[in-house]
Image (cartoon, rainbow, N blue to C red; front, top):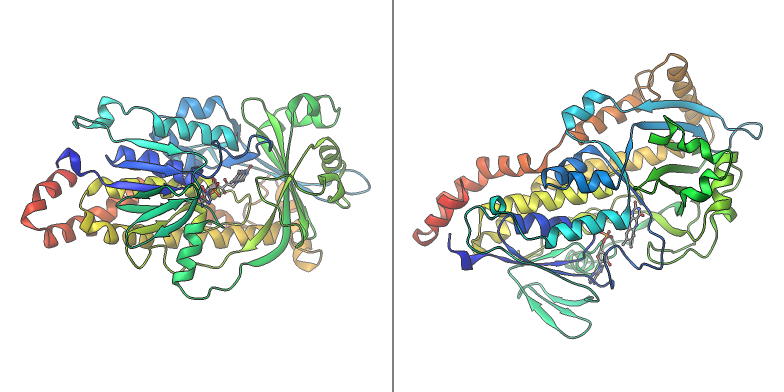
Length: 474
Ligand SMILES: Cc1cc2nc3c(=O)[nH]c(=O)nc-3n(C[C@H](O)[C@H](O)[C@H](O)COP(=O)(O)OP(=O)(O)OC[C@H]3O[C@@H](n4cnc5c(N)ncnc54)[C@H](O)[C@@H]3O)c2cc1C
């Protein structure tokens, strides 16, 4: 393979999916240009950064990329979760049970449940994308592939046939492949939706999520909230389940600040992750238990984002065969989904791994379709289970909610995990999670290559690129 035949990837969006793709494509030997409209990594610094739960399938990839020490230095290890009723009982908390992650599940999955800060995770990915590759990563190549990341670089136009983008500044960039990692309301996703005709609008779920972060110094000064720092609660996410409501609280990052999320019925507030909400959390919590109330009183500026059922893109690949979307741009999950970060990282790892097998521009369309064929079923499955999960947690009061609570209390009384057997739906949900955490995108991508890509390559290769095939296929 000659060294001047690297493909040039343009990635729109320098968040989780874009940066993970940049890391993986560089490791595959390609040149990457990342364009981000924000002025810095992690979003506007004026907005306090929120929190992230990263399950084993996501951390395993970062560990395999050599980032374990950096990630662990900035994370709280989650050991499970406790579940309470949102509204409490007689002005007290109403405990339903505890779930501890099965150590065997974690060993099998080669990862942990880590709790981090959004901006810190992105900073680690950003640094890794720009780091010089090691000799091992260079894999015998003389020169290293390049990653360039430009901020204040908003893409306002794109030519999918020419594989070029135009920035607000008027600058035009052209590449071999264009990746839209620009999120659920991104420009590239929007253009693909337009290619599919006249898509319906995203549906509102009716719930809005408020997010705030409470500094540890404030939390430990409160006699009740200080309990969040006592083991084992220190390593547990606290879930509160209510009628069309819910909340989560967990410690995140090396500073162990409290990340606090409240799900509230509201289809009016049209907030984003990048601007303060118009209302304070304390004004939207409704009737709740004392812990939620205390957290809400301490919470500073919050963001609020609506939960939406997004229109499903039929094709993640443009008709031109040169443009693909990934991360939230391809499969937007419900807001603060457990899987949003890990699946975006998986997407990046997968696309990098398959493109480690080619530098042939004639095969780009086939490889992008392989990405979609392999990733879409998994993402659709996870999206459905995340929606089901929200539905179960925010069940309106009634017979189903009463059955859920009774099953959880029975598990707790029997000394079982709160999501264990005893209730079929909960068990099914949990089995699905086990399958999700064990997945490895690099194995999946290699399986595609060995079963399909390599054979098609050999069948269609011209004499001129046989040398590439031999080298890439090793
Ligand atoms: C500022 C910010 C803060 C967030 N904080 C949290 C949090 O605390 N907790 C949580 O659970 N989730 C949070 N999220 C959502 C979370 O980032 C995603 O669910 C996850 O990272 C996977 O998304 P992604 O990388 O596919 O897309 P996103 O994270 O949505 O990133 C898309 C990126 O593309 C950029 N972009 C969009 N359009 C253009 C354009 N035309 N030109 C150039 N760049 C463009 C955006 O600025 C953004 O950086 C946040 C998202 C953002 C944008």
